[in-house]
Length: 248
Figure 1 (cartoon, one colour):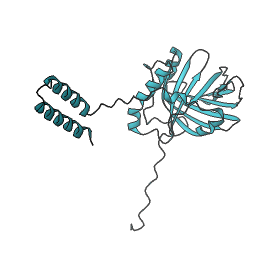
Figure 2: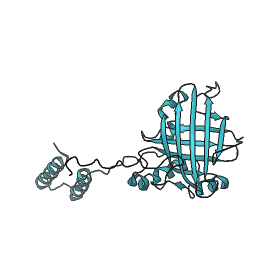
Figure 3: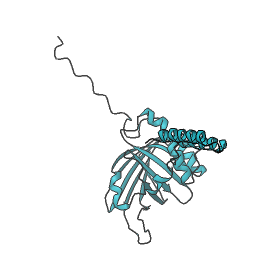
Figure 4: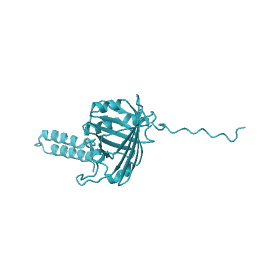
């Protein structure tokens, strides 16, 4: 029996009882009616909102870095230092290629800038060390980086700690920490970076992740969805239409 049917039946029984027994307190009817009305009313959905920090519990284990194999486009990024803000404000596009297995991590990052020097390429090649004191084995300590600026080798002495987070199949979230400051970098799989709706809608998620990791997000880098990369076009070349075999 539905809640509404039970409510109606209860009111009918109350009415019959009060007619047959003049001693029934009329306020009881009001109280029961009020209770029934609230019982019969649909309850509000009190389902808790998803925790925006939940994704950040899914750090990628060193043995699972092969999941990141492929090419990625930097979609959104913030830093917690003025030097980082300055770098991001001048960034036009950033493309990353990753190869990894259980023992080696190779990452090539190609950056284009709005002002000179126009191009910086970073080549990271690390042997993965599963440190006993890193109980989760999530941290990549990068101290083997080669830098080319506009095609010319330059010394690069910074070391960094890199952690990846698993968020969605087409997403890659990374923190890149050097001694002076940190970056939060959100990538999308190459080929999924030109979706204009994603460009508009994913930034709220990025801001929530930044807040969870204690990053300011008032000066972000955002990919515009069309800018070319240092080594290739953003969109694949369009094949010319095949000639009409029936044309004279």
